[in-house]
Length: 485
Image 1 (cartoon, rainbow, N blue to C red):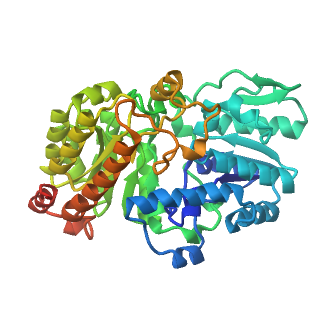
Image 2: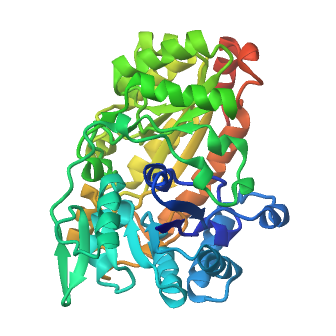
Image 3: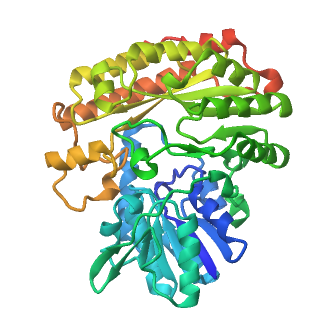
């Protein structure tokens, strides 16, 4: 079988697509490549010509907002050059199966990909990923997709292909959704992979147009799936149910392969790389002793930090830890089910900085129950927080989350299904805060975006040149504590 995985375009239409590809299809490719011809096309990746013509990043908030309209227009312009490229890749590869993987904001684009594929190819069209897994009935009713693969696809796809090759039905393939005589059929959920160590590392060789991506895209490692926490704005728990991590040996062997063959800067993609303390400490110890000039960074949570974890992080080459702090209001943190306080967030940042490790902090605005006072408290925390880098995002009620269910129950979104192309950081079609007007929120975003830009100019230190020239504790602390007016 010839199998083509596709990730749909979104930010590429705005001339600002991040040069980063999703890893899910590469895990699937790794499982299938032994018996099949497999390729992965990331339609978000800009060509070298596009990168050369648009070698800039939007820095003005209003420009970012206006750039969203380019995505909306592209969804209506079927003759856009990106869509022509999508058609060309499908025709050239001539697949038997097309697997489209999508997140929520890119879902409308994924439907265009499916429509294009249906028009020019006889391939069976599958859709998977977070959005399709959470709303399979909604996806399959579009008529543009033959089957939805729900949840983890490694075993489901192998079984699906065997049935397809044998010409048998799919009713006994767990984890599928499809239409039969006009009715939506959901086969039983498939059990999660009990041992993630049996899944091979992502197959980078299956990625098409590898020249479009910088080396840093090939030095990322995903240690596990899921998260042990249940933040109400995150769908992680609804997708994965529980947190599972590969063994420290399996993770380190992937790190070692990258270290020896690609580059010496690793980014652990896990939402909370420090969650499993035993595995984390074992990996760090091996990086400390066996890869002496490696540098790495990760995401974590305030309540996962400890003196022991941070000490070995520093000794093994960690230079940056990203924390999801989200709000400067303890009331909103409780509403989010973050299980932290403003006071513990500040303490956590100081803990990290005291080891000479930089802190990156994420914040969110625009939740349904957030008040003007809550937003001002977050702004004040951003200004005073000891951190080297700050990022802000706009609340989006992602399917599968408690907040999505709340928003739908409150009738904030009247359309069904919603216009998912507006589930975007820079779109304003939907207004979620019940206690803050649209005009207030727009003005606030303009202000906070400028504040964050100014703070990052003052505090952002960037990665060290190499492991032997790590930034000193004094330098990291000095930058992180710099004040802005």
